[in-house]
Structures are given as C-alpha cells and as structure tokens.
Length: 260
Image (cartoon, rainbow, N blue to C red; front, side):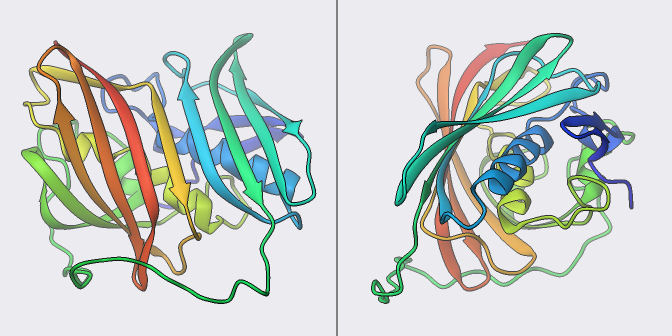
C-alpha cells in the first residue's frame, strides 16, 4: 500500500485517505493518523527550539474522514521550556487537540541512562496471516503499517507486544518524522492488549499521553502494552515504547469500557 494518510489540501488543510479508517466505521478516522498529523504540525512550529518530550492528544469526539483544518498556537513561550497546542477542526467542530511540551537540549548533560530488566525481543519474521483477524478485510489502516507480534495481539485477550514499521508518509510528499511514526501506532496499544472480547465490548480511549526521554531512531517501534480494568466500566492501557536500541518512553490511554 503506497497511499499516504493525508493529502495537503491547503496551507493548513488536510484530506484524509482510506489509510486513516477506523475499524468500527469507515466514515471515521482511527486515532493514530490524526495524532501524528497534529504532532507533525507542532514539530514544524518548534523546529530549532528543542525536542518534544511530552504530548497529550485529546479526542473530543468521533473524527470524520473528511478534510480538516489544523491550527497551531503557542500557549507558553520560553527559551528552555515551551508549550504548544494544535487543533484539528472538521465541519466547524474541534475533534482533536494536541498539547506538547518542548524542552531545550544541552551538550553538557551527556550521560545516557535507560532502564530495562530484560533484553529487547528481536523483530520476528513476517507471517502471511492478517494482523487483526475478525476485523474487516477492507480496513486500510493496518495495511499502512507492518506488524510483527512478539506475543499476544491478533484478537487474543491479554498483554501484547508488537514491533511496528509505518510504511507510508503521514502527509503526501513529506518525510515522516520519528515522532510521527510513534504517534501513528501508539493509539493502537489498547486495541492489541484488550482484556475482553472486542466483538462484545467497546474500548474507547479518550486521550493518548506520550512521555518521552528521546525520540525513536530507525523505522521499527515496539509497543509493549498492558490494559487494566476496574470492573465498573473504566480501564487504562500503559505501554512501554522502544526502538531497536532501547526504551524511548511510555504511552498511557484512559478507557471507557462498555458492552456493545
């Protein structure tokens, strides 16, 4: 599949392709591509000012698969620390908002420390099976990404770990950034690690929080996801984020869990 997630339809307008499709409704967008779109536009605004270390993406409702407008604004300017926000507006309604903290890097803080208790699993060999059995074969979002499951996933309840590689650009003709690669797939963590059958229960993430001490290097990103349930309709997914050299940060998603 070579279709990007978006075509640029104007200076701040973006037309989603079928690669952005939600698995539940082809007229809506999966949360990953809009997250990557917003973070990419914030990256443009903060270029040269440091590195994005924290991103909070809030989904303010269903996101139609229609052309939207992105607006970026600075909420807290600063030389060493700044906060910027980007909104995606469709049909006159803000459907998603991202807020990112950017911090200045320093050549004096030269010690790298990353904690992991076990070695990283290698990227498994490709398998011909569809990565998400039980979902529509015509669902285009997973075709834009390469999925290599280490364990779990594929409709199997419980924790899961999967190596991912995004195959297409976020915006046609524009190089995908490492942060965008991460955002495209990170919102799938709750879906691969669900503890209840997806054909009987809804898992609705209202937000995606990324806390990063560095951005991924290379094309492969590992999601190591676990979902916890309270027993009264609320859950949370916590995901370890890695590239092939080690940890890069953590992703979290609050969940509304309800019978279909």
